[in-house]
Length: 122
Image (spheres, helix red, strand yellow):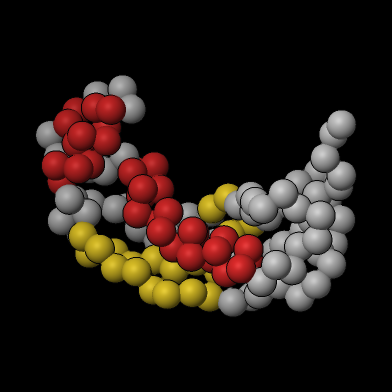
């Protein structure tokens, strides 16, 4: 899911695709990739290093393409006046049960809010 805006944000000046869900992505949790992620993020939890569990933030690498699809959709409309050719977004991932090595997963991005920040500082 994509969130845009921030403290002191003002409403967007034109229609944005709020409430739109984008492509459904599917993938498989690769045990070796999860181990490499754990070691790269200095998380030597034995369950991760042995390939029995997956670090929760490992999934952020999976959802990026879906988030980028949603962001490109907002930016492509040229609906946000006063921007400097950029859209900031964040993601929220909801786990329905633990992610395990070898598991097949699916994910999707939905734009559920859009705001225009105030003027850029001088």
